[in-house]
Image (cartoon, rainbow, N blue to C red; front, side):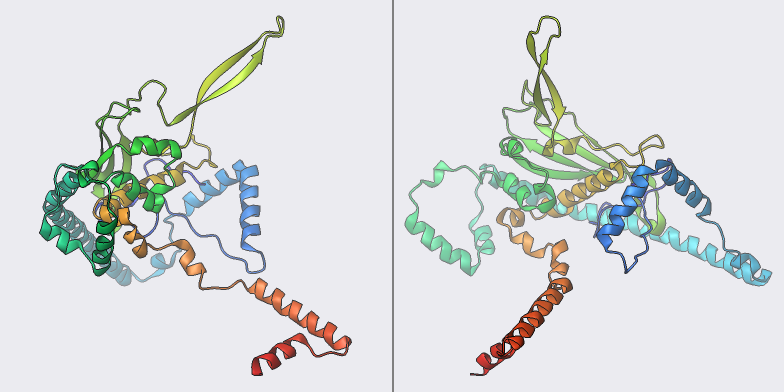
Length: 393
């Protein structure tokens, strides 16, 4: 994957808008498609060429960088009076860009205004989740559906455990996160025990463009932090279309208790002394997958980074996760806890499901045709005709 040149502006959606796709950390031109070559073979061949020829990749990047922004010569060939009009349109466009920047800033201020109104609701939710208070009758009535009332009647008949035995809503945030697809992929079995101590997830806006995610924890066996935060920063200048430009993210350091760091695992290796033949066991810690790696975001790539590295992809994923937590998980946590929010998610496989594999259909047609030929040679009716006759009977 290509490196991002130093100093290059990276346009990201405004902090108040969840992007429809991965955060645009960098732009890529799509490779032309060749109908005669299967896509997977073309991708494999292209990747192989680039992987074995880093000098070629570097040469292509340098060549392309010299072409960016170069004119085809058409504008220069226009009469002076026409070029003057073109320049005038650029001036008008600059006025438009100023208004776009003002628009995005006002949208952000409007979102902050309503966020202040949302905050008391989030605080009330946290109090109920953690067993500090109970919902009012009005709130319960407003949240009920016909299905809930029927289920409640059945539960009242079978309930044997006193209501006081259960405090709040156990594992509320862990369950909500596991139903949110992008987050569920990060949570390991080892993480779950620590995430059960989550008491709240909230966010706050910064004085500058950006936002902070705040994870609050009850005392647990893994770390001493009461809160672990991650902050997403945007640049002060606006990008094309008035959008804020995503800059970088920073996470808190987790104070792990001895032997409880979930982001590493211990590997044991035996070593034998060449002279004495004695053996010893060497233990070392190596990084491992964990949700808590989320708080150690990747740094932006530099010119010295390997062109084949996955830093850029991880930056996009990291940004998207922050947006998902801010725009999806926090505002509608109860819907993720119950799983109802999944009905409104768009999945990559949904579009593919509408199409059948043509190769499979062709194979089935060929097999049916071969079977018909064999039946005719044996003096019988083709199977397809036999099936048709059976349907008509």
